[in-house]
Image (cartoon, rainbow, N blue to C red; front, side, top):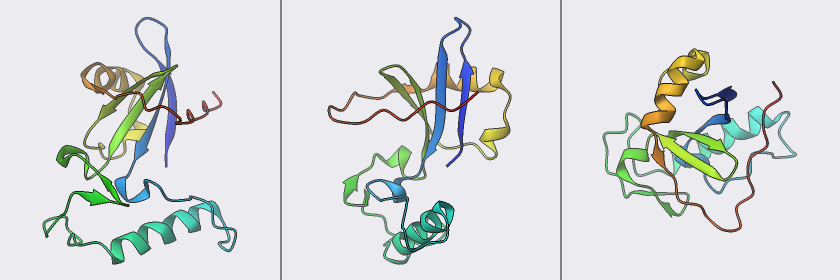
Length: 129
C-alpha cells in the first residue's frame, strides 16, 4: 500500500493511500512471513484463489469482498484521502498514482466522493514528510 501526504490549495494537509477490497478485514502482518509485504501478497493470493471473479475481473461477481459489501464502482479499489476526520474516495485507482504530482492529487481530491464516518475506526497514521 502506497501512502502520500500533500497539501490542498488552502494549506490543509491530506494523506492519501490506496485501498483494495481484497484486503479489507485482513491482517497485513503475518509473523510467519519474512516481511509485511510477503504477508500482504500472500493474503491477496489467498483471497483471489477463493474469489468467484475471474482473474481479469470480467467473471461472476457477488459484490462481497472479505465478507463485506462493496459498491460496484469501488470493487477494483480506490484512493482514500483523509484530513482530520474527513475522508474522501476516488475510484478507480490510477496507474502509478504514487508518482503523480501534488497538483494532480489536488484535482482528484476535489472530485473525490465524501466517505461516511464510521464509529470505532482508528484513523491511519500520517506519513513522515
